[in-house]
Image 1 (tube, rainbow, N blue to C red):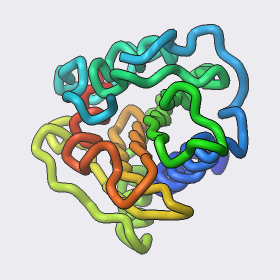
Image 2: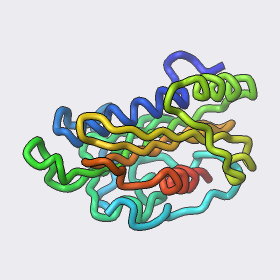
Image 3: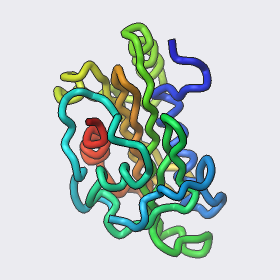
Length: 206
């Protein structure tokens, strides 16, 4: 059974919205600590799909750094730059890419992508518990996606606007871990649609 220290689908989704919102608002410098492996440079959000295609196994073995995550995201992070405090430690990562030069004075021009990953072997009962928790959470909707279902996973989405920032989040839980992709931008529309964050999240799996 997953321990309380490990993220669930719901906490990964919530964390993505809160952290990326704070980053874009200039309230904090970033995530869980520095990482020299943070992707160096951006590859405008929403300009294309993920740079990789999952093999159908639903593992996350190819992700060992934020640089790996950035390569897998491909054109999703075009025009954005890696946040210096993105971190990948052990089996967990929190990797962000933001509009260059954004601070409190120009947050209206901000957009960003945050990816939370966690490699963690989950039993059927673990997955069911997380699915039940997500389905019971207000604002979180299950996504029926045959690609995700093929490796025994389940996808969820959430959108919302807070303090002038709109976020679109897709979380995928698999027997081998979870991925949450959050796209946040100023205004009433997130820089990526639910379909686009779903494609980006799926593309991170092996």
